[in-house]
Image 1 (tube, one colour):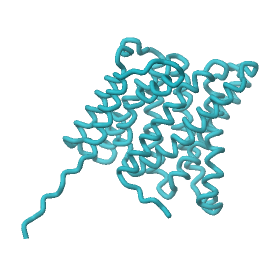
Image 2: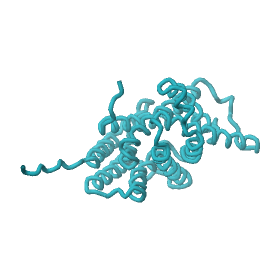
Image 3: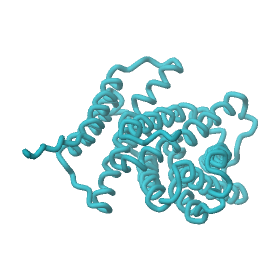
Length: 302
């Protein structure tokens, strides 16, 4: 039985996507250094696509895979998610997980701006208030770390990564309308894996940074599994499913709770709990609810 997509379910899927995305950032800390940005992104995207492909095959059958627009999906994935993934790793290598999450808080502004320009979305009062609360919640989540945010090259890479990811998420829905969330996610991540894999191969042949295989052990392999399967494959399928229903603007409001989710997983690794970031996440949640408010139609007298 197919569960109908409702606004509540779409928001829960989006929340889950942010949660598993944040899970991947601390895991990436074990990989950055031993594995350069291009090979790491290629491994991450390829593993994610390899995990999703048999699931998609099982759910929708081989005929759906044969008729999928692979050329368009591979190109879209390579140009958006592949580029975004490389820039994300470069950003985290130059900064830290919290800075990456902080820069990511610009995503709802970018998403809503894209919808206003491309779709004629109107900035209603609830949407404006919700966007303001989402940004405010992201700022509150920074707490005392605001002054420690690196606004140099790493921040530029993070901002470019979020822009590429936002555009890619939108085009995954609008440019691949005949596919389910499983199909859209699989073909675009396959494209990202292919593009970054080619890039990693070229870099290796031209004397680029090499993988430090001696530093790869069970901990790094487990971190790569979390970074690829949870932080990419599971995150992306939940994300694309929610974007398909909510649109990129509303879905992106959830991104500003990311610093809280990052802190949540870092606290599980031994760092202290931060109530300020928890408050920021609550403000973001309130913004998400207000932005999606629809006034009740007034009944006309009979």
